[in-house]
Length: 80
Figure 1 (cartoon, rainbow, N blue to C red):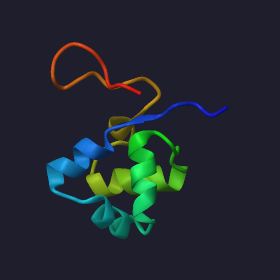
Figure 2: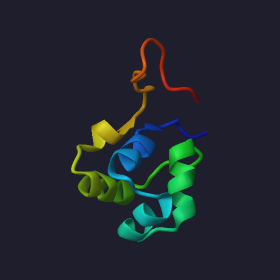
Figure 3: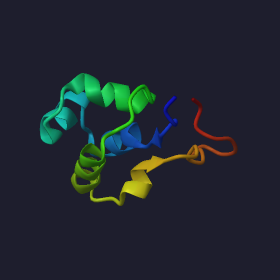
């Protein structure tokens, strides 16, 4: 059983106006990989997590978490 890893990839993509395909091309992965990551169906390798960190210019801890991120729209948390 793998641990659920939460992420902010959709938010970071939206802030930069990136499609899944554009992000995937920049990282050298299949665009479906980005979808799997965003939905929590796939946990990133360390290499991919570091590539995402470098691409977005943010620490890995701001992109991924073992706990749900607080909601940006008030009380509550990100749903599974």
